[in-house]
Image (cartoon, rainbow, N blue to C red; front, side, top):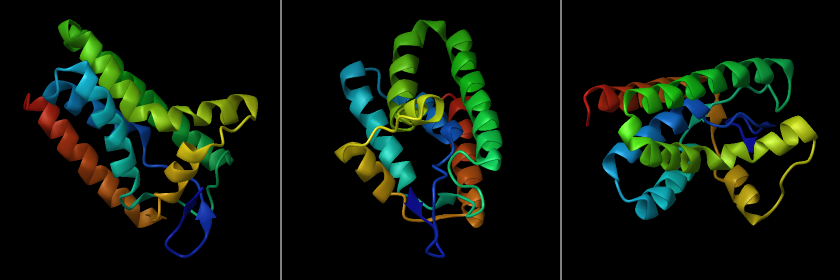
Length: 156
């Protein structure tokens, strides 16, 4: 769980769509899978350390959080599949870039579907770095998504 700007603890990670877009950009920039995997994982932590969207009345697993997560995950999955269709020759880089850029949030799936949260040093770090979540953080998320989309459309 991350600390919100008003001292309320709630858990709305940066949108998976932004992590997916970043993984796609990195997959275009770094052709070597051995370098791509740690770069994509580091990008996740870097993005989560930036101010991002969070709503104090939308705690983890609340109906509002679930609705946002479903839409966000569908958009991220659509982008991932679209990239695979558009550039099938780069499927390995796309898979590695997106997988590692989204991996820390994928660990939440065990908690969401099985009620079995993963708790270890990495997940504690992942929660601690998310120091600023607020409704106004949506602006930063939109700007990041716009930049990543622009880079992808422009072909880097």
